[in-house]
Image 1 (cartoon, rainbow, N blue to C red):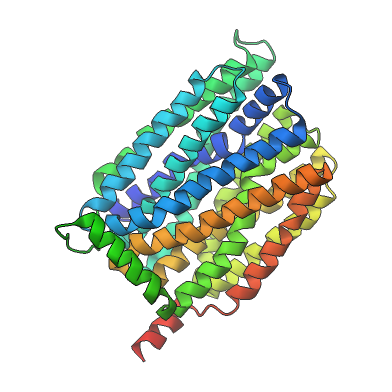
Image 2 (cartoon, rainbow, N blue to C red):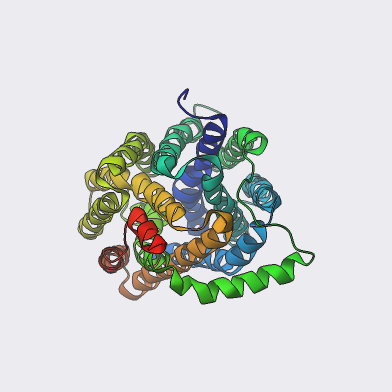
Length: 422
């Protein structure tokens, strides 16, 4: 990565570091491990999926409540790094602690998982906001997309190690139970996350900031209140957040609930793990491709493409019955999940005032996380009411339709800058 600065490389490496959590804890090993623990405890398939959905909703609600407040405080000089380090440290410790929960205790497992999720996403608020500090506006799409690409590549390494241990344990090749192998995967995730965050800690620093006040907390609440009043003046920001609220809800829900849904369809855990591994490999070049295409066709047009692909995913998921269907669905998701998240991050970073990046990314988090409350709840309640997870996934298409309609009214960042100058 010789064409990138030390700060850009260090920032992108955090995607490499924390993506192990995304694939092993959020998407693959933990949901399967939790489902097995809950099933052994006598919890029904639909109910265990619903409880996981409720847990994701609770975690995202907590973060939505604290995100803007912490983001506002973090805009003061020297505070962004401190908040990032707190959530990062808490997240790695909590993730390792998942391995210590007794194998017959599904509720404590979900409680610890909630702490890991809050910490992981909390650290990401400040990580995302650091984008304005490490690169120029012209390079944001490229740096953000390449970060996601690195994340997909990096996550495959601990994922391969983890699924190899789990598969070998299941086959009796190594003297471990599948449960013990899964718990080892949680420790591997925490260690990977910890080690590869070191470049970010050493080389990325806050550049755009607000001077400190004598009473930081009181000043932060005052600034937060002013931003609530002023956000209507940032027309592009407000419209983008509204569109983002809907379409990212569907994206996040599909990511967090995919393995639980696959389990309900009767797809074996080994097949699910292999499919998810290939998804990570395929997603890496597509995330970078989205960034390059955004340089040519604009980020907004590429967001349209990503949302449309996810609408196809929702329709296809409703009729999915076989492992082959799940393969096709996973590859469709792989083409767009990194691109849509990366371009959303860089698109928003271009719209907001740089010295208030944490505060505005706090609002970005509010809209994203409140949306993430709605999606899992929608899937959970629909699954319980109908007795089928398929109807819950299908209902997410409504969110994508609303998101793409609202996005149509969001001006391009360059147009918004011209509008502000005029």
